[in-house]
Image (cartoon, rainbow, N blue to C red; front, side, top):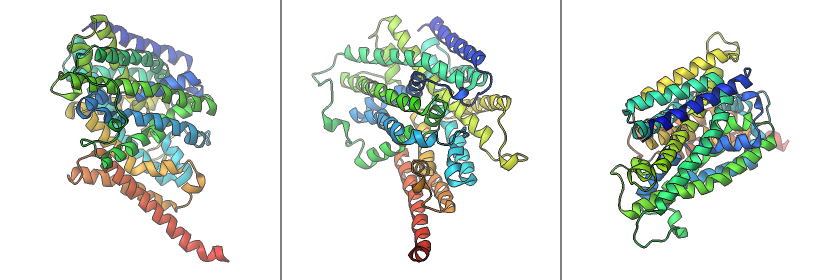
Length: 462
């Protein structure tokens, strides 16, 4: 492929980040809360179209067919729900900086500490998945070994994220969104050029629903676990808080949902079409790189542009996740000798934590070079422990129905159950494990609400 093009893209990312830093030297956490509608929309789109939504989605479509559309299609639904119901509550407390702090407003400080621990652990796995994808793409682009590609990606993204903070991430996301568009168009173009047996270009409605490969239970679990990440995921939350106004956040989420839908359809189409053609790599994870470069379907310049777009897609998710994890570690973990157990903001400390998380996740990527597996393990852990309490925060009345200790117990139990099920081998599917954890958490919270109501009924009757 083209090493010069790769170097140019990396330089553009770094230059954009450095320019953003000169424009805002005060708020690495949220970039001064001045993101416009277009910036929010572009950043949300770029963040959603990461490794799982590009390399991972095409690989799953190559294996499973059209039903794989829901891996990203559910994100459109999630962003619509975010815009309609959750943006307002998320922005109702101007002083908060992170998602665990939002949880604290509804459930107290222990909920904040539990959430911080869950996010710090799970987001390391999510970032590791991005490094694996980046390493695989750099291997295709410049011939680097996987470990070297992982190290280069982690170093470059870690540097510009630490240097400019949220503003660097937002600015680079806009550039990355354009490059991602080139990758999606390239995948669709290459898929249309494939020689396939007579087959419909678009699926019948039943093909989009569950199938033998993805039964109803797994399909619904996927919608719950993955869809929930697009509603109350830490990265979505940071974009909402970084917006200039509530209206800008709402409109940005709506625009991102509208743009995400055709991207999901095009990427799924590419994987299905490659499967229909009866060619492709032995490993489904290589389906998209093969379609763009190995199959010889695109001119060299278009193939290079599309592969660079994939690299941008990976970076766009990695930098957001990296800053989110470092922010949570910095502000929400109960550190010794800090007032009320939580430290004050410090840009210098945040930069150090960005470097630490980048290095730790790169080491995990080297030890466990998987994309979808790392993502789903993290998502199941997060969904089990945090999805239900976070969704309830859209309504203050609902979030206050159960006593706080019951909510804390539900978070702990819900986060533990998926890990026990997966490690013990009782459940093999990550999404199902996450859904079971969510049900356990919901059961504990509901039990607490019923108990509280029963205890207070005599007083109410008086």
